[in-house]
Image 1: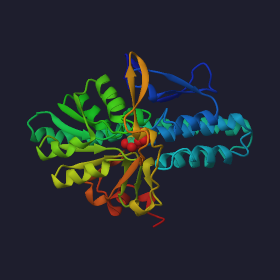
Image 2: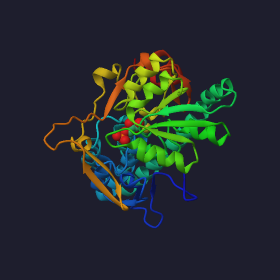
Image 3: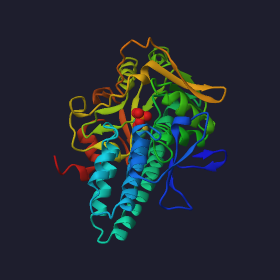
Image 4: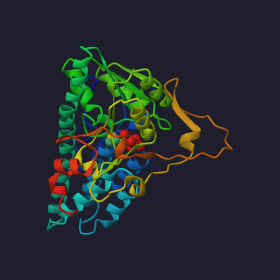
Length: 366
Ligand code: MRU
């Protein structure tokens, strides 16, 4: 996506030094645009764990480059240490283990360490190019949903609610939930996005609002508890969110609070779509509520709020220091509350039969 007229992806190889991976350090957005160099597996693991990069697609892409750096750090014979370190960073986004395992399988085909490094780099580049292409294609399929509503509204703005950041900052480019919005906007359709602030880390307020603003897409920031009220008053035509892990039966894990939006959407007959590249399906999980690991992060993220004052990043204590706080990062929306899934291959129902019809190669094992 464009930043100050220059096209950026969220992760890339430093032009002058192919042993250095560069990322946009998202902790400093929206008020500072900071590029960070990563040259070791330990730095990559820290960048994922401490959320310099976040979002399922980008976590996978970053881990893929982490495995490439691992082949530079060791001879490439034993990479299980790097794989374990990277996989241990965050539990919910399936793209992390998917990317690490894809690299392990590919690198194992290499004979010499130079060959293993070359394969690791090529595979990392494949994973990031695929991620960008799949998101672009999600935009093409998802745009049709918006077009249909726009026609019904005789061209009046289509009001779309989204939660967290499932934008280009959560992937390599385009985003998942935002890709249909960008595609519709770029094709001249009037759209407006309700952006949930998404406490406790405010990915909506900081990241989604920033990227929509950069692209000129009309949007309004709302407190997380506002969406239900807007739906009751007919001010939301469509909900589109992302996912960190979706079972092959259609249960969806996403940022905490997504389930509550799905309940409100169901109660108010508002279409609720989940956008995802196939790298976010867990083809081994059937029951999302019982099986998907939910990340718990530090209580300080709930008790404090961070922002900028006089151009400096600052954290303020909101709650009494003595109060306990729980910080679940994700929840599971059961498939019965989901209208459909928007994938790179098209739109399907959130059920096993419809998903496997779109991805028949995944049906074999069942
Ligand atoms: O904790 P985060 O910022 O990594 O959570 C991100 C989300 O929940 C996104 O909605 C999700 O990753 C889907 S977009 C890849």
